[in-house]
Length: 208
Length: 190
Image (tube, rainbow over all chains, first blue to last red; front, side, top):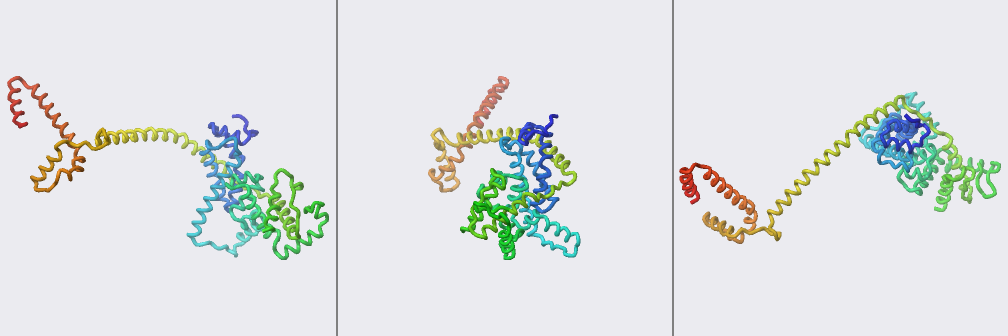
């Protein structure tokens, strides 16, 4: 077997299209952790994230002949993962509408500790505050380092739409996490801004 | 609306991929609120970029993914043969039904595309109906005649086959019996 560790994702995908299972396994190794983390966070459930990661790879393998190696494999596989997530959340929403909602046990110390951990985790807070698509756009942009164009391709939207979604997401997070928009936050930020040395450059831009 | 556009431009400036964060061109701030928004957004941008979540992969995930992929690969190898088989055999009944339909259409309609009238058939039916005390005119029987036309043709062919079979049977009989059988056949036809 040839060493495939240095090959690009697209080359590996091309080899997998030709029937090489080991090349596809290399792609699985490269993406399983990233996809699992993305899906677990987007679904807010680790077990669901792992299941959806498996389903994503199975779908990717069975539809591999449809992948164009001239395009980015990363964008393609994240598009599949994102669709799996959307389907899963829709199904879960239907189920939760039918079943009785479960309350949080305020007496359970483990549950309280887990909630405290979530509060301190920026991305967990972001998932709580943002809508599904806002969270996904923000994740792809910051965690996966995708460009606006690639994010637009994964989320099946235009670039301008992605910019608007990112703007909304940032504004919401700035309000909730940075205190922007709240009275206390405004006074705190303005005073900090005024007292900051070299806060404005000659072009009138803010320097942090 | 003006503020919204300004805030949007501040946010969009964070997505300028070509420039490193410190060189990104931010729109000129026009009010303390915009400045505050810019500060908050830049701080958030840095937090989002630096506070990367820990990657958590459950034990055995890779193995279970590969197991499912190997199973899917096995199914894929079997699937093309099944698909070819079904397509091949789907074409045969489709072609046969087209042929049957074309033959039926050819029998049903004449060379000009209309149903072939059988001379004297309507009068025969009308005569038979009058014997059954039914008042049916030959004109009103047109559709019925058309419907029975294929059966009529079949009847004629059947009669012709019977006559041929009878002639063959008579020819195969010994000499003295042939005369006897011929007379019997004539009686039967009469």
